[in-house]
Length: 449
Image 1: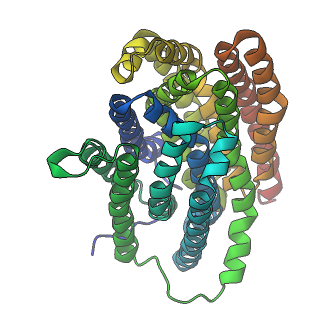
Image 2: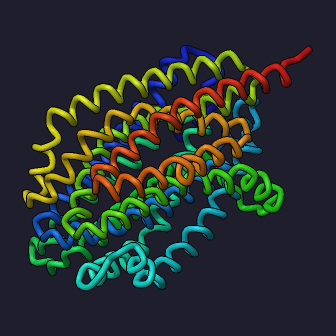
């Protein structure tokens, strides 16, 4: 058996830990978003309605993924803190119980999504043939969601336990397979029936099944699962203390996407398709700051558990700098190549105009979104999820929705995108300031006399 993953983030160079934790996850996240981008290219060949149909699923798909990550985070941060003080058995018990809760949650959500697809997406603005395509896609996608959710949850636990490498392999392989399966199932290559939008969903199901099997292999190899359910109630209470607020925090972004989708639906199917194209292109560069911010929970969790407060603040400072630096790079890339990237997927004038406008406005704020994610991750790792929830609620209801409604009324989709950009900057700065003050106060309280 390979050497077991052990807690390792309480010692050594912080920049190296951030780069290792971030690097492999960026690899995985980039592969995942590139898979979504290539899927958009495939569906663009099928037609604008196919692109619009999958775009309508974004809010629901994002919400389920966000809630899954939030619930997982409730267990993962406590696992990191247990590993930080050398309590591997406690970490194994929490991991087992956390994955069991995730299984129950994802199966229940998949059943509800498949059962209520038509009324849900009708509410979001899908109509006619597009609504039929949405419902067909979601019915198949729901089959793979529990497997996808468990594999993604597994990668968070792996990182908290101390393995920054294997999670990147899990996500990357699943994404590569999704791209490989796509044309066979969408276009009917090699005698396979051409399934169109449903084929894209089946490619997701098959690829993420492989990711799930890899996840099972890792936990079996590391012997981090337990058969006994003793202490399940106590573990559930610990996990939900952070997990429920984290789920609510994470679901704010999909709600914002739902607001955008509903506002844009009134401007036409091509505008919705353009937003979907731009969102997938932006996601490729955005995944870098997601990778950086994802290093927060294991780094802060282990060092907070070990009372290494100096390393907590040092790690966060590094993460903030990396997010802002990458945000500037991403903005330049999108300003220079945005039009070309969009044209690769769809050349309908309205689609191109909508997508390029988005890519000229939003990417410049990516670094500030990363700052918010880093701060929220630190709050959760400290078992203080309420500030992150408050920031997310204020972001949506106090800043974004009012500004987006005004922007949509007077400036169309451009106003919606500007409202999003302004919100990202304000909340990013606020989150960093609030988190720094909280860490300083708690460090004084917990430091030995």
